[in-house]
Amino acid sequence: MANLPQSTGAVRTRTVPEMLQGSTFEGPKVVTSLLMYGTDVEYDLSPIKKRFTLGALPARDISIRSPFVSGMHCRLDRKLLGLRVTDEGSKNGTYFEGEREKAFYLRPGKMFAVGARMHRLLALNDEMRACYPMLTDILGKTDPHATRGEMLTSADLIIAAVHGTHLLITSEPECDQVRLAQIVHAISRLKSRPMVEIDQVPDDQAKQHDLLRRAARSTLVVDLGSGDVRLPASFVTMMFSSKYQVRVIALVRSIGVANEVLSDWYLRQMQPVLLRPIARRPEAVHRLLDRMFVERNSPLRVFDMTAENQCALRTYSWPDNFASLRQAADRLTSITAQGSIRKAAHELAIPPATLYHWYSKIMGLSRPLVRSAELS
Image (tube, rainbow, N blue to C red; front, top):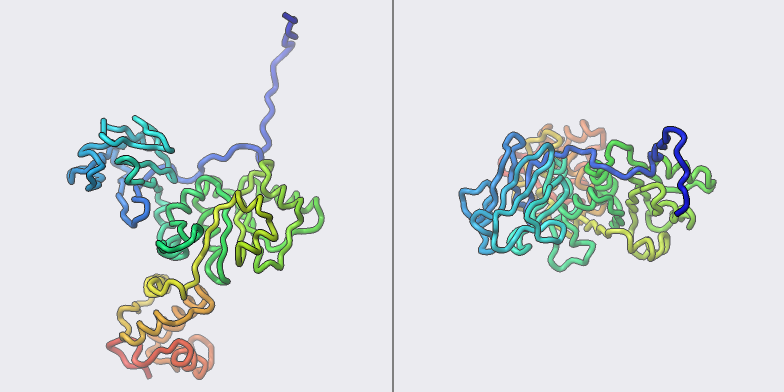
């Protein structure tokens, strides 16, 4: 055996460059609720409580009435900032990351299943819980007849955010694509690093490298529009390389345009997210408008409007999607507060004739707006 060289001094360990360091979870690690996947059922887990029980019996902290769930199925114990899930000898088992496990640690954005994987539960922290309603508003309810991209749920997007999955968001204009990207970044592992947004790439390669260094270990949002933005092939390669550890979120009008700009090879590395226009989910209009009224401190609610006006809102085409919704919320809030269209027009700094035309001809609304008031 050859003699090994002898050390002559202390070994100096070099620090790995920041953009090559692996990502860590920087958000709040305390799990404060469990969301039943595919539903809006949420189980609150008080952060001051140390142990929770899960089972089919009503007395459990998390009671899941199912023939596949044992009476005392598993327990969840707080250990430091995480939850340790321990199966209590259940008949159909507790599963984590595809395997039946006796015990495992659960962090925000992770999912486990009970009862032969019949019931899946997603762990959420407070930030994820706060973002969940906004995700549901933007994504809409899952359509059972939808394509793969439309089947993405709010829970799926939370998981994708935590795992750093590349996303391809396709939609009509003004479907809140950028807001969705901001939410994904806000609950991701490296949310403390600023998100970078671009709609064009510099020709100079040195500037391209600088751009990717700014987005290293963070989120790069690329607005490809309707295909008028072209990305150099070399930049696309660097963007998806492991060197910079960039999570790419591409905004585009269609999959076909994305294929032309990014190529099928990179598209296969991305999770498609299709945002349906407001006109295709009329059942959500009332809820979305009510949320906007709340944001504007308006007492108005869609339910307070006459039946004819509620129907007009539901059947309107909303051509500018969320922009049209926000305009309606602003104008209806002002009309309600001022008591007349004429006074509201003055407050909004638009001609009264313009507001009258929008109200009656464009939106198809009639007077009175609400059941108990007359408009001047």
